[in-house]
Image (cartoon, rainbow, N blue to C red; front, side):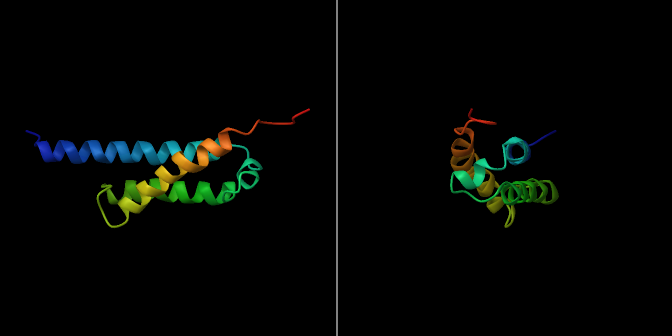
Length: 95
């Protein structure tokens, strides 16, 4: 029988893994010129940061670890700061 703390840790793991994967996929689909145009790091840098965050959460199996917390924070920074700035720019040619 599952315990409450086991279910809570499973929910935290699944949520953190979903969050980091969402940030990684979003970083991959955004246009590369939009990142420096908004004053953010480049697309490869954010793809590497969020991809590494997803790998750390998968490897550690817990977001509540020494490396798990910074990984979740990196994904949150991308989703809260970078994504809205990059998403606001139009895609393709403006003419």
